[in-house]
Length: 242
Image 1 (spheres, rainbow, N blue to C red):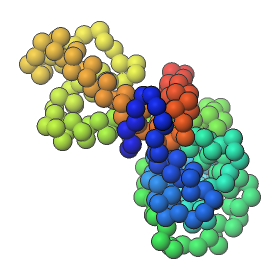
Image 2: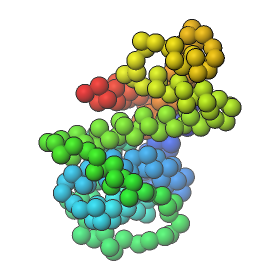
Image 3: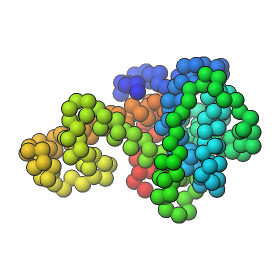
Image 4: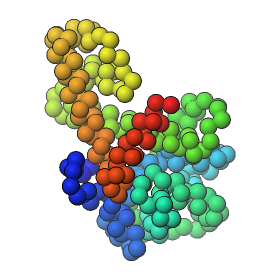
């Protein structure tokens, strides 16, 4: 993911690369979109399932929607959805379900389009844990989007810490990293690590700081401006606090 300064020109990220290629076929743009879709396919799958489609049909539709995007280079959705990848993909999926789902079997396969590794069995198991409530498909999509983003960042932080030789430290301190994690006592973690409570607190603070940096980088890769980054970050935290 592309690091960026807190001030100054907003850098070219994967999403801005996709947007810059929307008017013509671009192998780089397709590859960037494919990489971003790896993060977003499960929320979209949840949306299709909540719209009433069964597991197999939802799997086909999700896969074919991405093929539609990647093969056709169809990046010219309504202007209002272009700034944020989250909105762009959902608007495009709604159009796809309404107008093109009956043509999905006719879409070409291959053609050098990057393939996506989608674990639909895992997604269906996770969907089965969702409460049978009255959440609309749109709200469920947003909820799953926020959850997927935060989980992906936690996993990236874990991999960083393992590479630095801090696997055990991360395992012990991970419960303190969530946005709603308790800060009542670091005594147990400190005892396990054979350090003082103050040292444990400082290590948690460093991990949280890095978590925040990774999260900003991730969100920056899915918007087109600094203003949208701030707005999208605020929106994500509003969702997880509901």
